[in-house]
Length: 162
Image 1: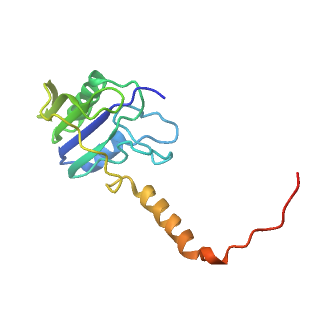
Image 2: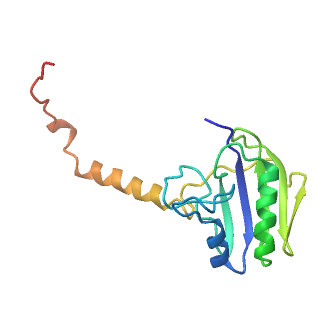
């Protein structure tokens, strides 16, 4: 199962297209890192596409076993490439615990590690940007329910002996 870690990312970016390019992982997984996402796989509660001019995302890191230093190093790389990136990233404890263990601030092209700025990471929001497939799946389930025969019209089929 692995040791998944939850993060909350809040802030802004002056170049959201560049940010999306740097966090999006293609089918070959060449650009994989702890804050990446891929549109080619269902990510139940990952960050998914957290890029934007305004950023507010909560989710798991891209894979298990990533730690605070991995997040710090990745944010340093992103900050150097996108100096307009302004973020507060709250990193949760091991095994998706809600307790915040560190906060990383990103500004002026650098990332810096600080003690936790919040005590808890909020719950993941599946309605947020990037979780569009969850909403599509929910609509599909509702469509099937709407088109299903009423419960009182159920008739069992013939018995099949095996």
